[in-house]
Length: 268
Image (cartoon, rainbow, N blue to C red):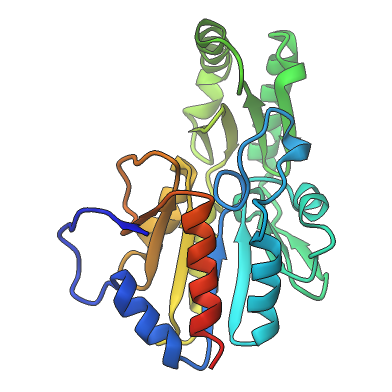
């Protein structure tokens, strides 16, 4: 496992060895995970982005220990993630950046978005169709994502330029935001985001409970910042990038080692 260079951090922020010590004696813990790029490698065909080998068995064992609340916080709609995690569906999932929530018992809720934001997303969808970008689009709760993974660089730049021009007046107004992510661009409601989902989980947890979040994307930085003074933040990427996270792991091997260590430390 690789730890990023030490930064100026609050004294109570965990290093990895300190976190494992706290986890080994804690009666409860929280493990929060992004999906694409973290638990699963990126794929050209998004519906085939299955988790790395060993990830699902390890998460299943961690859940069965009964000491860890495990939740996946993803930009994907929950219905997509359920298909990719099958048959491991008794897990807490926050979908569409936190707009959706499904508990392990299958109960589901979705936060309503205000009518003005919904109308602007409707207009954005119309403009996206007029720009002939519908084949690249993913329509999901509270947002529209355009995927260009695998395109030549000049084509990606062309698509991004057309989108930004088409959506400029919509994205500049309060209530929506334009996010660039690994392999695309998304126009979505400003809140909730993944950081809001982490904040909600923290509010439901005892302040002394060890908690960690693992993510890879720019959209995960909201979660890193929210958790930075409270728990362990982990960047999971083959290559390092500037981040608020404290620890850097290279998937899949170091991710697997991390989950194995979590299982070991919660087995007592």
